Image 1 (cartoon, rainbow, N blue to C red):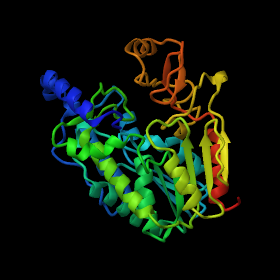
Image 2: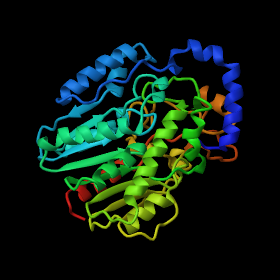
Image 3: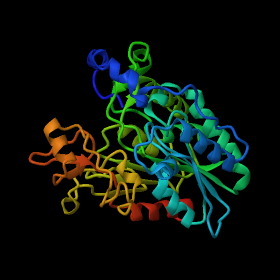
Image 4: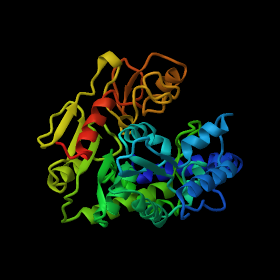
Length: 388
């Protein structure tokens, strides 16, 4: 996400691109593919298979475990042993992959839901491919797979994380056949107002941020086009929400420490415009909200060396192999000094926080898991069953 002045980014990035132009021409991570994969198959398994095939040909792999990377980045379907007749379609966020919903999806299928995740065009392969998608690409992949899943379910729920939450909210507001919404860190409004300039900036510069691409589950860099299309989803969802109410059930989870989104905007929408009696807001933070149907969990946890909650952390269980308490992936690019980042990368004892947090005497890595994951999922179950 663009987090500083547009003009300062333009100046710094222009200099960086001039000095690194030879690298950008040779590093395939930052080069777009000739085209994006199809998402309009009539059969979901065919969609999975053909997307995997495309990824196998176009993805820049980060490890020697090709199949593991494909499983993390391809769309997937989980079929319950004891089906309850309902289904959930999950949509990841900007720069992320279907792996974002691995733990939530596993929980939902255990409750009897048929669960599908999709891959937003431009994701899962190499970050250069985020130069290619348009808003229509992202809207159409959601609407197509909503239509594909509806005949399989008595009730269809939509779930989204960050940008994905914007897309599914707009879809549900325009489709009365959707049963309700599961929203994780909904990016209805960015914390930084300068993101609105991303589209104009994309004509002058290619990258909002470019970092080494080392994480096999998500991108570390961001092309300006990706930021611009994200902001397109903001404009659409804000337009769709304006002067309206939504009477279907909504589960929303937000971290007070989230440095990516303006947390006041979605909580205000929850309070004033989402009006179902079974709604549930999970608020991870220290400040009490004067909003009915809110459950607050403290995120200052010295026992776990947690300073505050983050944008991404609420999605993952403490037991997640990549992002949990014993995480294989440590995100040290967390808005701190280069010295602290290096110490984090070299295995120093760290505390965990949102991006950009500061604590005197502490080296901070990104918080990548939810210490209240089980309790949050219990609230989700209760809301979906209409038992609040």
